[in-house]
Amino acid sequence: MYSIMVEKIQKGLVLSKEEYYTKHLSIINPMFPQQLNRKEIEVLGAFLALDKAIVEDDYFNTLARKKVRTKLNLKPGGLSNYLRTMIEKDFLDKSDITGRITIKPYLIPNPIAQGYMFKILKQEDEKIRQDNKID
Image (cartoon, rainbow, N blue to C red; front, side):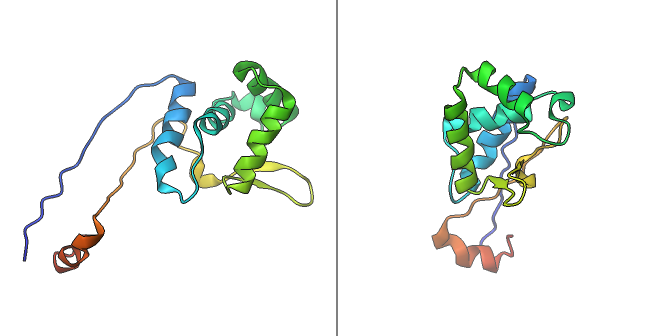
């Protein structure tokens, strides 16, 4: 049996509101089978960073879309294309009945601070993992 010491990598960041949400999406993005591209992260991060008074209960209302389009210098068709691809990649949901778009809950971080814990293991070391009861 091997003795395995798993060393943790830790780093704290203090970020602006916009950077907080885009960094969050960048950190979790590699864990998904289909990934967001850089611009999709920027677009979704901009929606997440909007003031809650603008968003109310709909991140993608008309005013929210206008604010994001202006901030990112996008045309309405360009923004619609990004939203459509994020729906196709299953990061957003669109109601068949109302047409309302929602963000998957696992993409929304805690609004104040978000911690992460990931563990990766090389496939050929699976037997070692099982023998040492490493989860």
